[in-house]
Each structure stands twice: as C-alpha cells, then as structure tokens.
Image 1: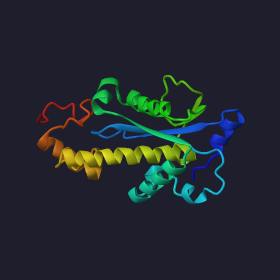
Image 2: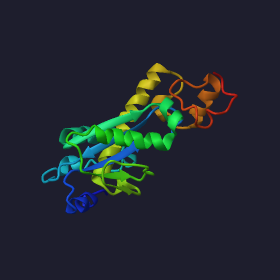
Image 3: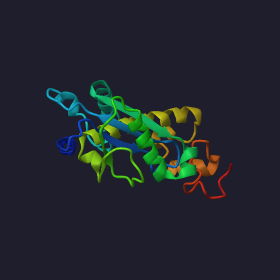
Image 4: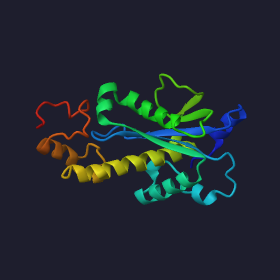
Length: 208
C-alpha cells in the first residue's frame, strides 16, 4: 500500500509542500492523455477514513475510484487536472504530451508546490526539484491520489466521447486497443478523437 514516506523524505530536506503527479491514458488509440497533481495536507491525523480509499488507481474498481476522487478533492490541500488532446499528442509525441499534461497540472496548483514526486516518466526539463518513482502510484499516497484523479477525469471524457461518437464502444474500452475497438475502426474509420500517429491508425486501408 502507498504511504507518505517519500513525501516525508522530501520534507526533511526543507521542501514543505510536496505534490504527487501521475498521468492516465498513454497507451490508448483514442482520447486525451490526462494528468493530475495533488498536494496532501502535511498533517493527516484523523484522516484515516478517506485515506484508506487511496491506492494505485489500477487496483480500484470504477466505483471506488469515484469515491476516492471525491475524498481527495474535498480534503487535499491542492489538486489540479490537465489533459492534452489527440491532435497535440500526434504533433509532439505521447511521451512529451504526457509530461506536458503533468507539468500543466502542477502549474495550476494553488498553493504552488515546493517539490514533485512523479510517477516514472522521462523528464526533459522541470521547474521544480523532483524525483521520478518507478511504480510510484503503488508507493506514494500523493502519486496514488493523482493517479485516481487523472483516471477518473479521463474516463469521464471517454464516456462523453461514447455519446458523441456512438458505435465505437468508448465508454467500455476507454479508447484502448480492444478487439471491439479495432473492429469498429476497420468498419467505421477513425474519429477526431483518434491518435493518427498510433498504430493501427497509421495504416492506409482504414476508411476515412
């Protein structure tokens, strides 16, 4: 289970406000990449009830993610979510887009953080002291909280996409390359939400 030991280690170095940052949606064929940044209160005494709902978002059911997200938004010192659209993903690449979404979320935090804990990502530049943590959402409560907010925000976008573009199953597969999604692409062609730089979108035989 994630805990606050990584945050505490940063605070011993004099960084008071430590934000956890994570993204969701690097791999899908469609939809945005989303990221969130969360600063948890330094003193979490008595917060066990809502903290117990925070875990790596992949370990939680959709209902538990929604409940956890509500608790995070209610109790966090600061939180923010950012999304990068498919067109920009195609333009700059998914790695750069994921990092941009993460740093955009950080820049929206009020109060601003002093340091960052990032779920592992290749960082080309960062305006604050940071550490990248492999499987950070399973180790840091702040990163886990960010992973939940990012996942909940992106899933909501894909449910809305299902309304705008029926027949693709976006509400079910959230844009990932399931057999149903690939079949819909071959039958219907891509939508404006599809990432044209991703395979199989680069294949010329897909209908327009």
